[in-house]
Image 1 (cartoon, rainbow, N blue to C red):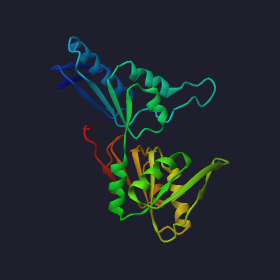
Image 2: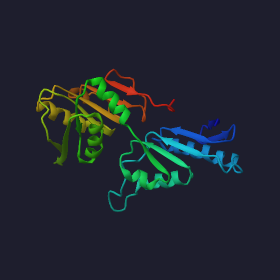
Image 3: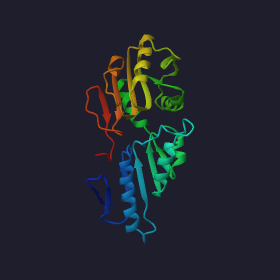
Image 4: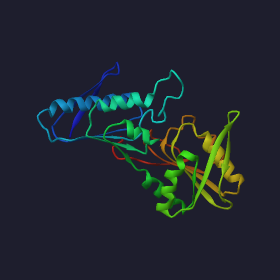
Length: 255
């Protein structure tokens, strides 16, 4: 399926379908503009295929905007992921695939949604490092990291964090002395928590600490992370990164 996208100076996006038939759209999905672009393409496709009852429309979202806002945190606040999911549902795609969603709530709120696993990227990182110990950064990540550890036949060390007076206190349940460690998680905003976790791992004797995240925002750069983390591995689901400190796996469908 071929289509053209035009963006006007005021930010409006418009789509034109070149030919009818099935459509498979891939977007980063980390901005409202991405979602509106997908909506414009889908609306044009619907009009083009109004008589074609067998045509299938698929959407792949590599980094779902608002995925961490998966509940109403405080009274009177908006439930942002629900707002985003309602917008996506209004497009009426036959199938929506989301790369490594932050929680199952995204899949529950979005119709016809399924998860695209990040396993192959963790596996590639794991093998390139020579079988390090996997570290889950918190209780929420433990189940997913445990499943990956079983597939890779890898050792797994759980950790957990609580905040005391605004500062994270980290507990590590396992022996890492003399071992290389790979922290595995879904998303890094600033990355400070990973810095503290890597520091704690090295205080307990870890020889090196590496970090894998699928969605690499790193909104404050890498200066602090470089103090305790030896290297970062990630996909370009959120943005392209050009830095020797980062190994980035490029996703098909992202320009």
